[in-house]
Image (cartoon, rainbow, N blue to C red; front, side, top):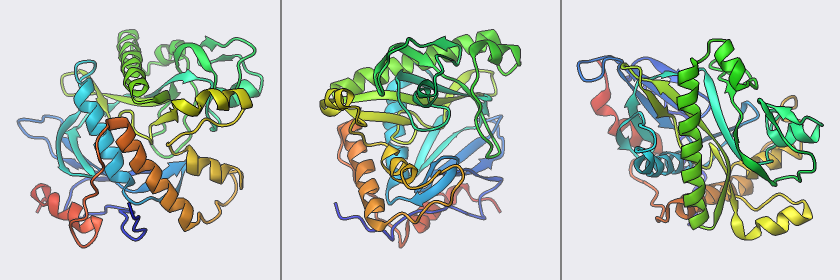
Length: 326
């Protein structure tokens, strides 16, 4: 597929929509409460921005559509494991969900000793830590090796652009972030979702190494899965065929997640402190191709970019017109 680098949804600022909230990747709007939705609904527009190291790195063509449609594929297949927030999909980049109160804990499930960020188990392990997130890891693990069992490595949820901080299950309850019953339900559902995700990934020749989930409470106090699930942004996927050789040689396993661009940046600067060098157009195009390949490999379906509208923003605005307020 030819990648048109000019066709990107870098932002979705739509003044006719109420109560905006702009995140690192999504631009969101809160619709008022009504009889059907006592807590209201939230419009979540997935832009093409790519975020890592607590900053925006670039805009990648089709990334927002890939994320929304990949999450849709998984939401449809995991509702029996955990109910989710989805109400409608008015546009390929948009989901309308029940407005939920996001729990102040980001739940990361890890099946492998991997990662490049400061909170990853690999980074901490290589620094000498063996006790982390309330778990003890054995000595002698190699980079990207499978952990004895999948573990949850929760962090505080930084709502205003701050840094997420590592937590243990005991700290979550002791600090009143969640009740014991809530944590038990969240952790059980997270591990079940991850096990299902790993099973499906394995059937497609992939390894789901780790992922993050966000949960929220609806107006009835039910815990719902929100945000996204098992997308290339929220998850680390490896290609199973090349994994064993990479493990043996100490190389990074072949992947199609945002480690592609994250690793490019990390080898050229300290991404937490230094200015990020301009990312070349070839890397942008390559990353777009990676996302498209990820969608097709994960779902088994052909990616069909929506090229309607003069620009992606024009298309999104048109499809969201029924939600405009006076």
